[in-house]
Amino acid sequence: MSVIKLLFLFGPLFFGLAFLAPLTAQLIERFGWAAPFGLSPLQFGLALGGLLGLIATIRGRWV
Amino acid sequence: MSELSLRAQEKAIADRFTDQGIPWLMVAWGLCNTAIWLSLWPLVLLGVIPLWLGFIIATFNVTLSYLPSHDAQHYIIARKGSKLEWFNELVGHVSLIPLTLPFRTARITHMEHHKHTNDPERDPDYATRANNAWHAIWKTIYNRQPRVKGGFARYGELLLQWNSRASMAALMDALLMKMLHFGILAAFAWNGYAIEAALLWLVPKHLALTYIYFYLSWAPHHPGEGHGRYKDTRAFKSVFGNLGSSGMQYHIIHHLYPTIPLHKTPAAYRALRPILEKQGCDLGGL
Image (tube, helix red, strand yellow):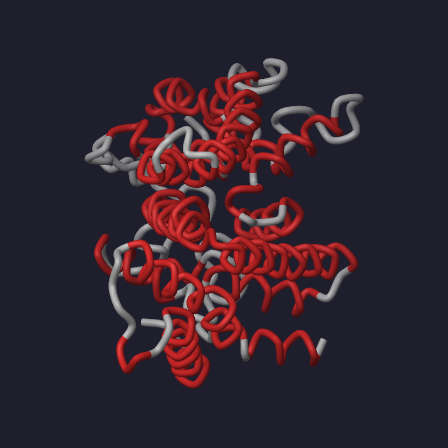
């Protein structure tokens, strides 16, 4: 049970990396935007998804 | 008229609306709704229908997925112990797939909601209590945040507390469902279908949960302070009418007689209204 609790504790971070990252990359490609700082869409997606997930993990809230 | 004869009269009227065979409307609703939602995936991914249309249909599908299972939770589709109990369970399980709420988890927590309606400690749905409609919408969103103990998280906490064989099985179902949902979303996302997965499942699910918690939980129990048979649930008039509120205007009937099928509650309400008035129920001008 403690492993499951740990997984859930870091759930937002996993979600950020596993879902928000490719979602961000695909949105950038779909709308023909350019990722900032010379990053590829996926690199930017991983940075943004990871950051949002980390913030949600620390705060315990997305909003 | 004495309290006892009023109750006997009430039960005699309610009995007219129960045990009328399989409610095929709810069966068709539950099974077809899930089938339509599943069919959206190939239709959208193969470009047969546009994503925006798939998103709108999916949002309706996920929102509509709870109520057929709710009838199944109460063994309305087929009685417990009857030959067709398996069919009741099938409808319950299948109809909830789009919402990713396991049937056993929904049933055990819902039965406790009926037993302890509006009890801050024991009602699994108490976290939806709010001061007004806007506050209720905010609460449904707030309750879904990762470390907030409301919504499905409150279900998990209570299932652990109850610590029975049934509650642990329901908790396991919930954990598996959550991991499966997450895994499927991630698999679609890393295979180039993140936008499709978001608009066919993730976003519709959150919109649906906002609606479901608002209309199926908050509105019929507002202000969430009454206790007892005639006080813990109310009738109310919805600006979106009976269909728009998923029949919840008459939810008081469901709490008094949980085996009356959803689509019979308006007629049962009209028949029982004079008695409910005498019992001092909040009928909200309905």
